[in-house]
Length: 102
Image 1 (spheres, rainbow, N blue to C red):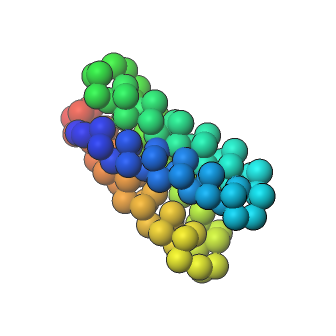
Image 2 (image 1 turned 60 degrees about the vertical axis):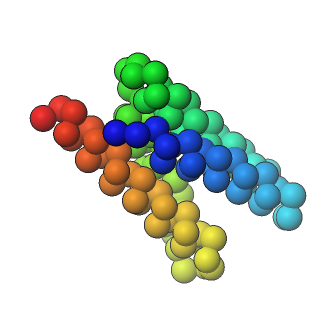
């Protein structure tokens, strides 16, 4: 189990939220991007330090991002990539949790 996917997703979410705000003045994009990005970065730091609940937080952030981007999947490449990357990250961390608990 690695913290790298959480750090990458956190960075991408924050950059995406700030970019969405800069392009369209969308405050929901900014809040959601920074919020989910912060969850990913916190979970990545927790995973790296081997503290509790880092994997679960990463899985929760992935689920939150997946559920929020799934309805917009067909609206263009950005929502489609959000959906795919959140699903892949969610699968990665759910498998890591399953292996840890097994």
